[in-house]
Image (cartoon, rainbow, N blue to C red; front, side, top):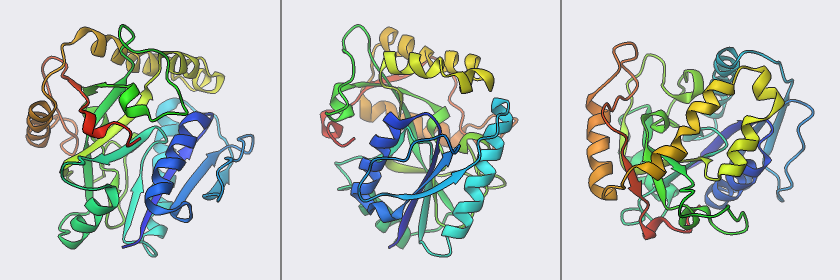
Length: 279
């Protein structure tokens, strides 16, 4: 089984380092493809290095830039599918993690799924990990993130069809596959770590490129994750995620039938110890 993992990055070296370590450990750096958005972006220090594609940075409003990025990544992934059995495309702060009670790692899950394949793409259940500012201190990047961060908001925003078994066209932000249904894989989670540290998230929101691109309100909405995690009693992980997976599979927004919907009050979970240390 040959797996390629693809992302794009601008002004996010902290998450790129985490991304390269996690997916490089699973599939090898030679199977990682990183689009550097702008010739001003520093090359990663990783040794051996991943495959890099440097493209011009073109300033644009957020929604325009997101659509353009999704088209570029879809086109690159389409070519990679000529060489790889599986192509994973996601943001640089997103980490696909299977439940260790069921799979040893992501590679094991993909091997089994590939043998049984009957869909073009798969999603993990979205978990937006945020610092519980009342209980957790600043993040230490020389230690695993999961374990330092023990709470997550169960979020449809991160239930993304990141895994493709055939060429697909992703929509803006990789939140859907155009003209295709989505399928949430049992026992697979997408951990979004963008809000793992309040100070880091605040610094990102002050990035001049993001401000110029109209990201301010978007990032402000994302920072609500801190309030949700701190203000919502956590539910049982297995029961809450099982229910969320079922609800998100059945319910769809009327304007986007190929995206998940989960109405009601926010759901927060405490990340079990079995996940600690994986990322």
